Amino acid sequence: MKYVDEYRDPTKADKLIKEITRLADTLAEQRGRPVNVMEVCGGHTHSIFRYGIENMLPQSVELIHGPGCPVCVLPIGRVDDCVAIAEDEKAIMTTFGDAMRVPGSKRSLLQAKSLGADVRMVYSPLDALKIARANPDKEIVFFGLGFETTMPSTALTVLKAEAAGIRNFSLFCNHITIIPTIKAVLDSEDFQVDGFLGPGHVSMVIGTRPYDFIAEHYRRPVVISGFEPLDILQSLWMVLKQLDAGHPYIENQYSRVVPEDGNHAALQAISRVFELRPFFEWRGLGSIDHSGVQLNARYAAYDAERKFAVPAVAIADPKACQCGEVLKGIIKPWQCKVYGKACTPQTPMGALMVSSEGACAAYYQYGGGPHQASHDDLVGENAA
Image (cartoon, rainbow, N blue to C red; front, top):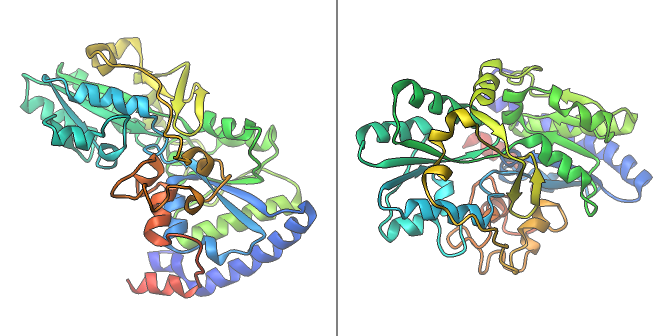
């Protein structure tokens, strides 16, 4: 395939869905329940809702929307820490647009901005470095977050700041890692998953080898998937084929982008600047060992948590918010008590309603509740 519309062909989608149905029905009958497949990446969740894929599938397949949206899993306490830094008169806080709207216990960064804090949206950490050059009398803080996908650009920016001798730049680091997260999901007592659609963007950086333990130890198939409708459907079919054969392994559907050994330059920058935290708190999932990174001792001068006093208090999610249950696949977004009522994209109560990659926001935008979609939806998307 060469053109994007080839990845949205409804005829090919129909053939894949028929094969998925045949395999899934057989497997579900053997198990006495639907086949549970988790898409780890928030980008996949967004595509699944956007193209109506979930509702094209048979009832013998259950898609579980995983924890792969870094904005969505940011805990309230870390947001409060970020707001505290932003409200310091000597600081200019910079971050991506979605992160500005994540609710803290009292306010979001966007609300802090409305009250006078200097909070600026940027498109990359290098934009924050430019602001530091232009404002030598201020401390410029970049609110860094994301999985291994965005980690290299942050690391390279720190290296660039060091090389240029820029000392009024620092990082409030909330970068997280995918492998310990998947392991925590697999070890969860109240969670049952048969296979995974592996994250395409993260795998572009780390490669496919780090997932080997999932097939070897947990006996679950993983298929690294692209983000177009046919990518996702083909990947799901590949997972079901492995389950049917009873031989799980790591398969790379997204080989046009993902190399087996990852991106060496990106991995080198990450290892040079960052080290693993002993643990990191996740919204909806609790504390996961070695699942986050921090600046190592060599780059401590660029660590905002050393430059500024932060509350560093763990704060529980609102009781009415059921983000954790959505993340684990226990309920669907529309089954949450506050979904579409107290919690909307305009007034998000939970983090899954903030980012476009969050399951609740995607469901709200493209569905709003259980609905039926047809293969012709793909045609409409092509025409658009």
